[in-house]
Every structure is written in C-alpha cells, then in structure tokens.
Image (tube, rainbow, N blue to C red):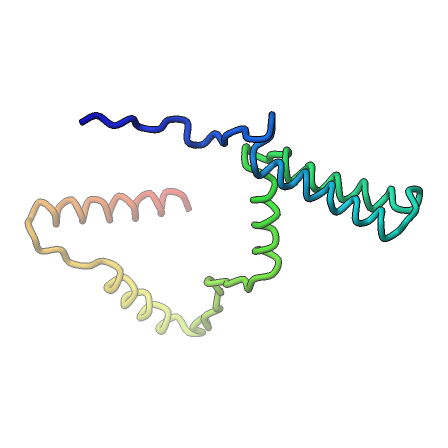
Length: 144
C-alpha cells in the first residue's frame, strides 16, 4: 500500500486571503484593541498615538521576520532571557602560589605524574601516546 508523504510542512496554509491563521489573529487582535482604545478615549486625536503603537506591534508580530524566524519567537526568547534566572557555571578561583621553590618543584612533579596516565592495552598505543605527549611538550616549549 502506498502512502502520500506530505511535503513543504514548514509553509503555513493561507486561510484568510493572503494571510495565515496566525497573521490574521495578530492583525485582527491589533485592530480590535485599537477599536477598544478609540472607544475608551473617545477622541481620535488623543487616541491616534496608542492606536499607531498597537498596530505597529501587531503588524510586526504578523509579518516581521528576523533571521527567517517570526518576530513572536524573538519576543518570547527576550522575555525568557530577562525574566528567568541565569545560571553561571564557571567561576575562576585563584589558587595560592607557593612561596618557596622546593614546594613549587614538588608540586610540578606531582602535577606531571597525575597528568600522564599509563595506557597498557598494547605497546603500539603506548608508543603513540608517548609520541603525542612529547610532541605537545616540544611544541609548547617552542612557542615560549
């Protein structure tokens, strides 16, 4: 049995003339809110500024796209960013430096013994590991 696979699923259907359902809701909501503002203020001259602001926001929500994403997604992301807690994972802590050279040398030896693990699966892996370590040490010394 053959089934037809839907294509172009990212494109929304035009339901109300040239407008999709979301666009129609944003435009109709802006027009309705503008009408309510006009009724409550009862003067066209005074209510023109809030009506222009409401219609600009509603038309931006309906038609404006940033990086090929709808403006409503940008507004939602901005609200999430400003009103949620921000979690910072990395916090650098200053370690006290040893004052005498004997302690520094001892710490360096312990650090070197910890950083290079011994791989004992096969001799070939051990050889490759030691060559990689020597190469990185040589390149670090060469950069200094």
